[in-house]
Amino acid sequence: MIETISLLSGVTLRVCRDTRFKQGCLSFQLVRQMDKQEAARNALFPSVLLRGTRRCPDLRSITEYLDTLYGASVSALVRRVGDYQTTGLCCGFMDDRFALPGDKVLQPVLSFLEELLLDSPLEDGGFLTSFVESEKKNLISTIESELNDKRAYAMGQLLKTMCAADTFGLPRLGEPEEVAAIGAKELYAHYRHCLRTSPIEIFYVGSAASGRVAELLQPLLQHLERDVMPLAPQTAFHSCPGQDVVETMDVAQGKLCMGFTTPITNRCPEFPAMQVLNTVFGGGMTSKLFRNVREKLSLCYSVGSGYYSTKGILAVSAGIDFDKEQLTRQEILTQLEACRNGGITPEELKAAKEAILSSLRATHDSPGSIEGYYATAAISGLQMTPAEYMAAVEQVTLEDVAAAARQVRLHTTYFLKGASR
Image (cartoon, rainbow, N blue to C red; front, top):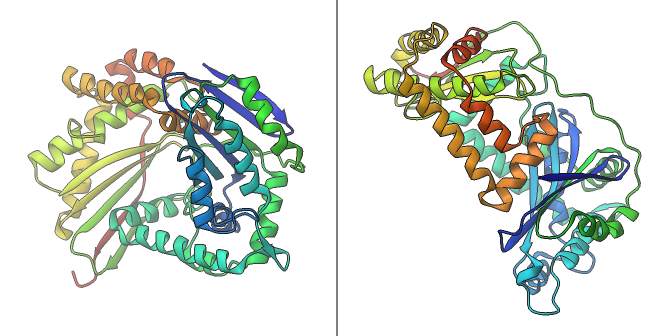
């Protein structure tokens, strides 16, 4: 049961009271409209905040202080959820019930969160240049490591091409050159603007009552200036012309990505059927793509599909030999056509449902997974609890899956191949 409380203008606290865990967690997220002009800055400032406060001016002093709080932790949190980018901090800590008599953990952790958010060391009206430059290097390195993963790179290029009329194709962390151009004073001004104008989502998992958590957050809230800019609602895929893109690069294995669109999003009644379709089609080792395209026909080294439910995009990725592109592409479409025609065995349907149900059962296995599901669901517009989601999946029929498949249309393909092939 999630309890939702409005704490301040545009500040929402969601509490999952759960006494099963020794650890609790609390996330503090600023929700922003995804925007190319600010994505890199939004991704950078949480890491800069974690570099130090005026009381704990470096990483060592922060670590030493957190160690006194039974090994509590604070990490940066940057997500892309449909049309939105969320950015902030996530705290992990021992539940007060397991501390020594007289010791408290939640209250000092939230006080330290306030310190990180509002008491950074400053110079010349901005963050410390040394902090910013160091974290810029780290962020650029992270972005470049993702670019070096050619499967992830190819999927990013597919989404960028498909979503030319949308912000969903923008990289979650921004581009390296955008990060490199950020100045310390500019970043601080942007951070203060975000803190003042962004809707704020706070999510807590632990044994404390919601009223107690709200009370402990008051010192932080009292120091927040608020002039909230409302967010536009989440939107489905924005129609634009499809493309067939080929890129050459020095790679040993081709990467074929095929992007499909569907009007079904996680805000539609047909959403559970669409999730089952994705799993039957390309989600795992029991899927049609794996068993037929990879195992039976040996057309690829790897293959699978993913459903971006907030936008209504189904994307297939395959690692192939360069000369297998057309055969692989045709066979992927053949397997989708089989789904449209109801060519799904009872065993395939059962395996797909069980895979989804197993994943949903794991939602309540840890504070982090609880936060991940519910916080993202609230931002994306998903209105189902895991239990409701499971019940809906169990009710999905073969006809429901076939009907969902008939609403899927190929939009764009992207093929990454060797430069000399």
